[in-house]
Image 1 (tube, rainbow, N blue to C red):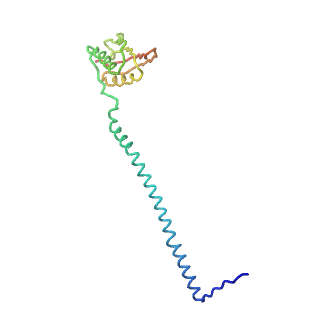
Image 2 (image 1 turned 120 degrees about the horizontal axis):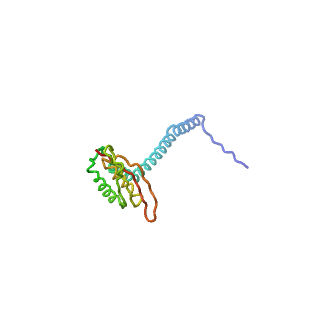
Image 3 (image 1 turned 90 degrees about the vertical axis):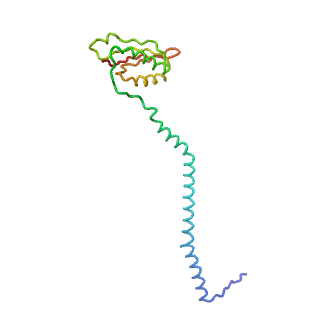
Length: 178
């Protein structure tokens, strides 16, 4: 059979116990739980900061490399000299310049012929027909080198033809004469 559990507590003592338990619960609700949530938020923020620091350490060398390449950017600027003219008697100098530029670009000069029909006394320009052989990547170097020639007026035409072993480049280049 069941025994009755009987607690004899004085009525005032009961209210004291209820009041103390209420104060403890209130202390937990107002003080400890918000402090626990605040601390857990701080832990999350610390983890985020640690991850950011780790990323900075990993990406730092890449950033320095990018800064260095930005400083070296001036090296890759294409030549753009002020346009001038060349005296008619020195027009043969252009052929020597083209041969030198083609050699430094790694291209082989096949032919370089001035078009004499464009060299009338009243004409301010002279057309040269240039034929080169080599690799396509070297054509870029050649064009950059030609861009540095101040009396080169324009390149009218570039014809590229694939041949066995190498490519052939035909260009029509105009130079400005005095």
